[in-house]
Image 1 (cartoon, one colour):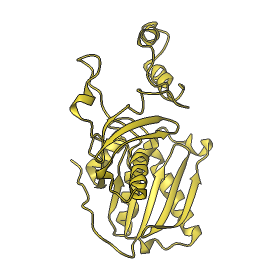
Image 2: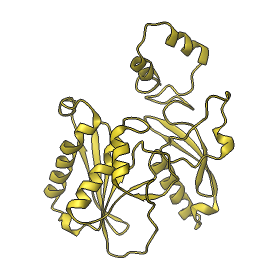
Image 3: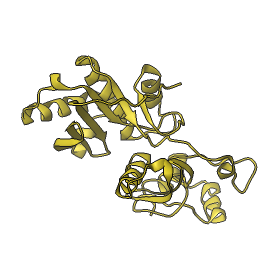
Image 4: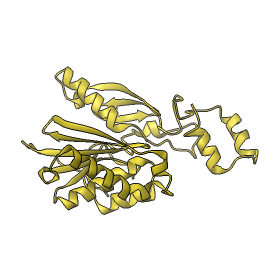
Length: 256
């Protein structure tokens, strides 16, 4: 069980944000709501190919982040908190959560899959620990606020689940609510994230009560096949020509 952060009013604080992606790590430092600077730390294929899995990239990426911040001239001792991009951990309601050992273990093990975002919590925790400040994640892809009816699929043996671009979807919804001088909990919205993957979420009073699964449902995207003609895909799986990994790559990575 992860521990949810209860909002507090703070002034004059500095927050480091860490967003690990497949080929780069984006970082930013904020003073209150103002971004002081952003840095995109690129990682070449040659740098990453030395690691056999994503988790092994942790030390390398952390060193790259620290080096980039020091070159910029920011004193990490000024930090009040570190926030990492949430990964494919246990399903949880939307919100802000403290990083703890259970979360790090689930990210390392790839509870819902392996992705560079799984490194966000451990990098945030490590930097926070070294500077005696708390570490958090916010609205990870694992957010699951589905209503019971949204879990029903076309077969009783297959329950639908949630995996979405929650961070961007909820941030966009909050910005829209702000423009209307309302709170996200006052509105019912449909919000779409269009990137390497696509998720389209129905937000009811601030909760994503229905959404296509970001890896294997919904519209096709630049990197993912989305929903496929099922019998034709079954023919592929039963042909004996493809390994399990190759079939998964057809859906995520080489589809779209």
